[in-house]
Image: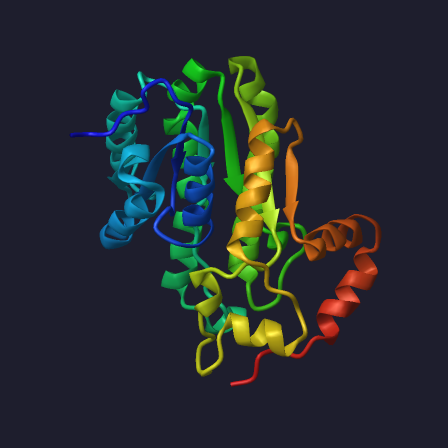
Length: 268
């Protein structure tokens, strides 16, 4: 028997098979919400549904780059929620770690297509369901969207774009009764941190920890996302380091630039 929202609030999450998306899905389900789990990882989605409870959600294959995929996934989700969506969590994203010149053009394109186009596609496709519920659009950006991050140049550019889109839609979507939030985590323990630099045996997690930088658990991000659901602010930050970065980028950009330049680059 197919699960349904049964009058519960409903959230649709991209990139829900792992990382922040899965942690957020568990949190929403624990709060009694119906959760639409979407990803390109079909096996991961099946495991995610078991984790949230089969009666508490539905799974949807979704490549966020594909508008037809979005339309089909949201049409199927809407049938289970009486045509409503209280929250869209635009979470899916990827990163390629390494010096800009070592990242291939194809890998740069992939980050742009998933991290920017995927978020734009979701914000557009979900609007009718969000309008019906007077819902909230939550986009996951990053502290890399506050100040350009070395060895994450294209990723950083995409997260600046997500932040800019969120700030613009916060104004535009208000006319539809839809609010917007942009969540900016510091580095969180997700599969993205296992990304290796070209020509190196080390990955992002190795580089961060060797530099003495914190890596926060996914549950911290899920908690901030949950706060953003009921909150009225536009920007939300995950981790003390994120709040420090926000302050430094606003008030001490010169000092922040010096700090970034003083950090050793990941050696090959």
